[in-house]
Image 1 (tube, rainbow, N blue to C red):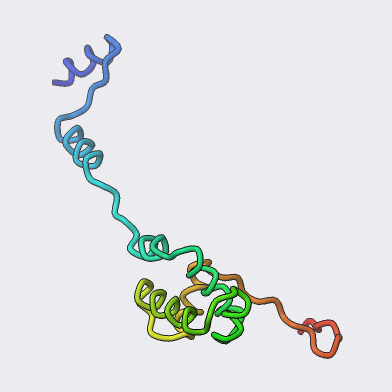
Image 2 (cartoon, one colour; image 1 turned 180 degrees about the vertical axis):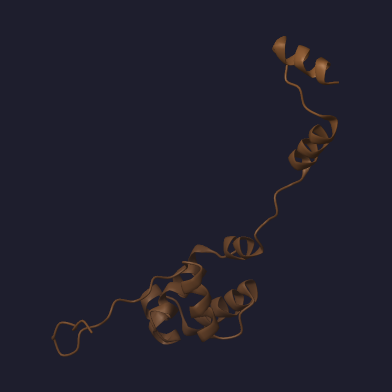
Length: 120
């Protein structure tokens, strides 16, 4: 078998052991595992993503509605859909999820009374 392999390689062919070939073929035919979190995030609409970003900024439903020119009831419906899609149960869990999955940016430190923030 070794001589056959040497001859094949010398002729410009590729030589793979049968067991190695089986492993390679198995690896190639298996579908990559889907990330369930990515599928959840991909199911969000653009509007739901906007709502998540505003929740992460600390806005209340009324403020979100005013910012997006929609009613508070519509904001509530979006939140229900978001909670269901992401399998979170409340706003706090949503904010944690959003920050950990880059659905929202951490807010910058606000200055108080016009004074610049101090480094500690």
